[in-house]
Image (tube, rainbow, N blue to C red; front, side, top):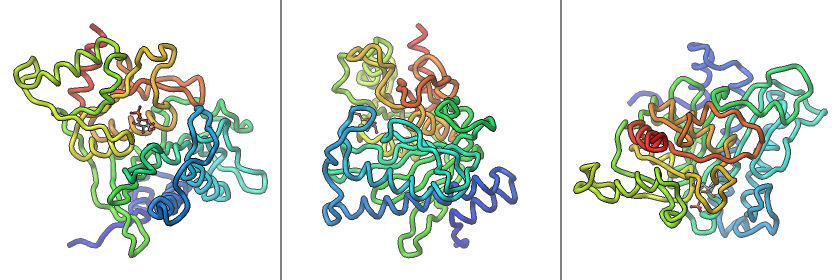
Length: 333
Ligand code: P6P
């Protein structure tokens, strides 16, 4: 068996051999990975660590914050603020951006994250995860929220860490998708899958079916056809999964294909969708595209959307390319 490749070695070789990542970006990714190890440790404690349950506060989305939401957010801020690689950070758990304090050097990168996605699953021991996205400051002015309002196509790195039966870091720097599994004995992430490819077709869809009556017609049409099975127009049977943790659902799709949908629905017609563009949809869409899949909001490529607000939401349809293309085509009909 060949010698295991650690995350550090992979990043050094991407920097040295492929010129894919500058030293400061390599440092950033190493720091994020180390922070995710710390979050994994806290998550794994569960009831033994007094980390479960509500924190008794709400985030910018008006959602009740779990204790672990706040812990994960603090771990990422504290791990990243002093290294000199970042100008600022943005988080689902913070109303405005966090500018690196003057006592530390500022770098050129902008780090965005959902520190603990899938919070509703924390207290029932179902997989959750951290999602992150990296942008670059584009001018020499003092960093502001405006610097973050770049399309997903401008990302220089994106990934997630899923806290499941294994803790896995999944990453792209634009050179394919790599998966690293946390070796708790060594305390390091080890490369366990490289150049991940999502099958172009699938027989598995992921959507919260309880919202069916609220969906737009194209989504209803697609799901109805899946439910008709091999007797219907699709000529094959479909399976359904919904973990209600985007990280876990997307990880399954990267591993075996599938389509994930959190579409616009008529409950709040002025909201484009539930999921956030900047630190959920954009990083996940880049990973999916780098693995040969597709990601749209039903009308356009998610990575082409020009954001106007830091916490704006978006309708998400991503996964196996041929299925995403079909749903997108139904929206055009
Ligand atoms: P629902 C978790 O709260 C999340 O943001 C995503 O991780 C997940 O896909 C979705 O919301 C689940 O939403 O409405 O099914 O609980």
